[in-house]
Length: 197
Image 1 (cartoon, rainbow, N blue to C red):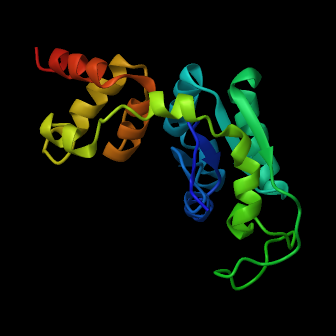
Image 2: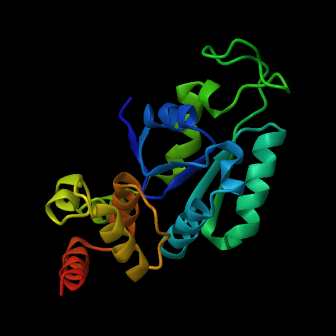
């Protein structure tokens, strides 16, 4: 089974959900860190910025916590920018956990790969992916341009983030993911040049 190429960012609750989805698709997958999304205003600002440029897929667990996180994001992002996906309620326990969740159901990380594949398959868009994935921007570019691996890299990332109305304090990986969606490589080069003028 070839991995799906999904052009839209996918929001999930945790890192294990993210790892599970990476088994079935190539996409920009952002974890809310569970209830961390209620406190991490920068992450919510990033998701809002991305939603202004592209629709976003929202895939949370089917338990009470997942519903709260979904509700929070649904109220923060325009409805027409959200693609709401739902997993079925299946009783069970994830392998890595000692005990089942409070509701005794599996989360995204516990879903069969085939189920996740089938859930995401309608959103694979080869034409859009071929356009969107042409951006060759990489971590090496960020390093070359002083946005990663240098003493003042954090402040340089903040300057670039402000130019794009992104939150400050982004890690190199988070900034790279956002840049690949929001701007072209040429626009990136122009912005970096402006940073040093």
